[in-house]
Image (cartoon, rainbow, N blue to C red):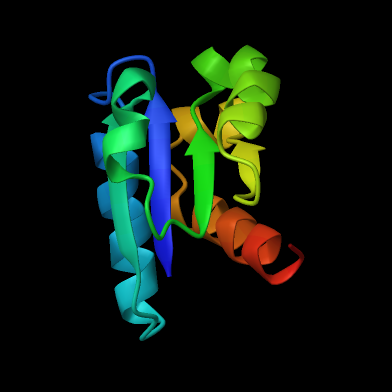
Length: 100
């Protein structure tokens, strides 16, 4: 499972990525989870199962969906993002991948 988190610059999501990796590890789920700035996505999107947008760029969801058709795009809940709730964000990604 390949999950990309995208935010304005790629920096603020780093801690959330680590929390998601911790949760996946505890569940014995193999997952490649990385964070990038929105402008860098096209360099890393190949083979991606889902793109999660940080709440600060959620307004760009439609634009990202048009650029990457066939890849589910979800916006991370502001509260989950702020609390760095890796489990909840990982489960959001899992559910979206299963329902695509």
